[in-house]
Length: 112
Image (cartoon, rainbow, N blue to C red; front, side, top):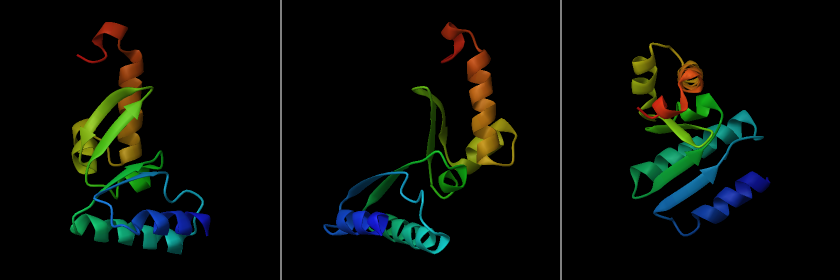
């Protein structure tokens, strides 16, 4: 109920930008679906919804991703493009592949 109340309070003024940190962690599947339905509704209006999450199936619901690990941007793009560029079938596999490549690169070559 706290998550539902927090989201309702955030939506009262129909903000043009909504920043959410782990919005569906700990909620039941029905409420999770309702949250994402509301996020899509907002997106189709005049709002931008920014979601921070470590749950990759949540990331798959987003239009664009910025994958970050230890403060370093590993990838930016649609979930589909990131999977395709890394030759994998899931967003989680893409993140793990990117993290592995980054952790093996010498410090000066990480952002090259």
